[in-house]
Image 1 (cartoon, rainbow, N blue to C red):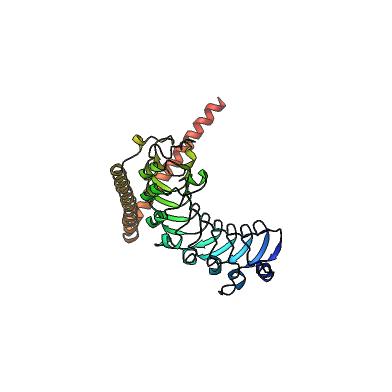
Image 2 (tube, one colour):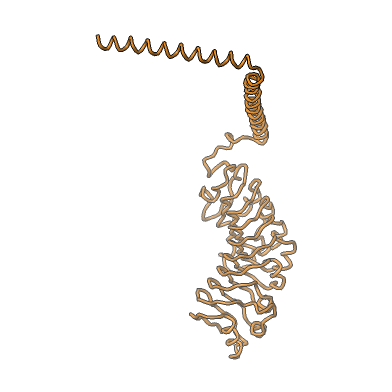
Length: 341
């Protein structure tokens, strides 16, 4: 049994109503693209109206205005394998709330405010996960190699977060178990765009012969792009936009020539030269300022202390001023005479 609704109002009242109507064999609940409000996390207690729906296999609460964290009662449903919570206002430490989600095949929590560090033991928390979409949150820390222990994983979307560190080499083994009913599930997808990832693109990604989508743009990746990433019967990755925003990446499909990129040794030498040049400029400016101050006080201090020197100095200035005034007047008279003539 499944339901689709266009409704509005607090979700808690609606779920309670479903539970009270004898829907204990409800298998799918799709509440996406509605105007729901409120929270599905009731004071930290497991809501009985979720616990009673033991046959639910798919839940879609996306694109609403839901708050709080993922209630543990959702993941405790024994047959739940598809959970869609994207584009709400959920928050909290994501990975600590997934401890009971071991039956999930697909999880999408993109476009929320989840935080936290990627933790070890994900292969135990999400052992069956095939599609993992965490884009558009505030998750941080390195992408741990334990992520590669998710042997069923075929779709990985970590875009628009704060992940840092290098791309794990073991991602080249993504989706090695081909235990699916449809060919579409064999098409791997990786999106790591708009994070703070560093280092080179692992050569192991060329092993993903069934990779259909890849996006590594807007990170801080360096080095040469490996050749023959993702060749398959449909395409090869020759679109430069999937690598853009990484100024130190080079090689096709980018126009940046790797032979023109400075090596690590050259970069260090340039940094040392720049540092030395900045140091020389700093000492030059310091010496000029100190020289001006010392010279100023030598002259002015001497005039202030020695009265005879002060009189001589001002007499010299007055004499030069008078001579200049006379010279100007004579030249002006000569010029005026020539004009009248």
